[in-house]
Length: 360
Ligand SMILES: [Zn+2]
Image: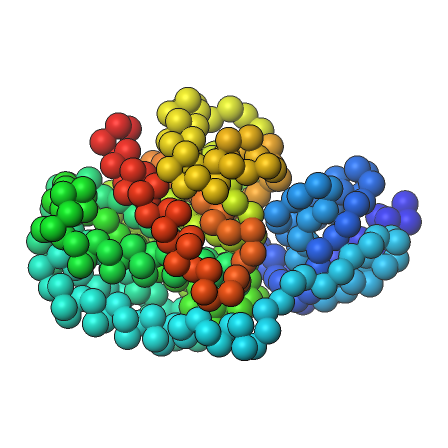
């Protein structure tokens, strides 16, 4: 009962009853009792992430540290990046400049468009890579989304490198030429540029975008975009404008391919196929397949930890767009000199993944 009382106090300390949890305090929590873990798991204002060997990241409103102290839980600050380390990465404005330069240099095979504005009024840029990119046609539509957690930066960098490789080698490399001839590939390099600018998980409203989508297993189960973050609304609208059938969503903090469902323990109807696609990705990105934490570098989402309001399950359930969550790097914000390594490790896996749209 002591635990319960503390949690009620915690719940009352939140400033609003918004449907999406606010991130005002964040920690890595060490071992807790199964009872307490279960209670934390069911508090809508708390977010568990990246469970590993009994410890996990925990995000929540003001009062979280007081609550943990009251319950004698051991916790520590999350790793943060030094300003020097952060400053080696491009700013969102530099990324924007890069994308604009690419789209001007390769007008026939790119279309750069904004799907909306972030909380701080930054454009959410998508680059489409395809033959005759300016015209949308009936070829299969594919998408990548990176950096919805602002402090998980490797996905954004991998995407920019992928865009450069595809545009510079179209017409020269047969595999890349084939990809752009056959498919319409849309890439949102940073869903959370405001978070990326200051290296925070949440958007500028302190909302965790990967807990902000409609969820068929919770009370927030209507596929409508009102009362959500502007970044979430933009993605929902974007997905209404296109017929994406396969997509991936990049994160960091682990190295694994996470397949549906995240929000319920039930077996996914198409599990054999999505597992096969996930295994193939991990196999083509050897450091992921070599994981000592996840067998063959893949995991079922719910078996790892439950996520409510995630983009992956929303995308699949409401929009028939099969999506996996790809965790690219154990370190969320590695030294910038390591980014090329991650790209090299993932480049053929990315191509193979897009090609799988033909096997669905
Ligand atoms: Zn993430």
